[in-house]
Length: 279
Image (cartoon, rainbow, N blue to C red; front, side, top):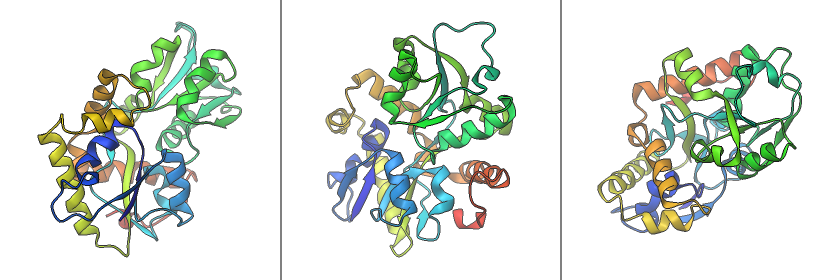
């Protein structure tokens, strides 16, 4: 079976057992490691593997071909994207400072960017200026060096941005949670509708259970793909993004996804679609 997910610690932690043949009855995996902006485009063009990790924000474009699986993804609290600027924070730093400015984002179809657009529509008078898409690991250096006015960052940047001399303008996850009371939907696992998605769900949940039961077993695999992260940062990444929603979205998880994509559809940020396709 072909699968694509990112080399980030949460994904390698979740899929370690299945990739290494430790899930009874599960087929052998042919793995492609790809950042989420790449898999978002694959899914939208129906060119992707049978199973893959994409942004929740990309779901409206792919639900005719792929089914959302209720496990394996990233959704939680206290783990949202950040908007960063250079220099020390000032009392006068407000969202209005982004008006007409250049902002770097990791993908045009990322959940991070969708949250940013929903937030900016309320808080940035006149809107931002230019949106520049770049690989997420290039964003903080670009903000630090002044080629970009602000950056939208995800993943381990939550832990490392102070080392770049950057300041937090806003935490979009905190905004979303205070506005809705719901967790933040970030990354989804999808599978082609022609497959036995019930079986795939069971194999992923078994892989998650193995990861939790044997937390040290995946350490070498995680660090092999951790893009030069320290072991401490990789563990913090896993602790933040792998939680009860990784095993089962549950009603709160589905409510969060429906709220995000429902709002976005009303605002014209994603195509309108039948929300029942999410379940």
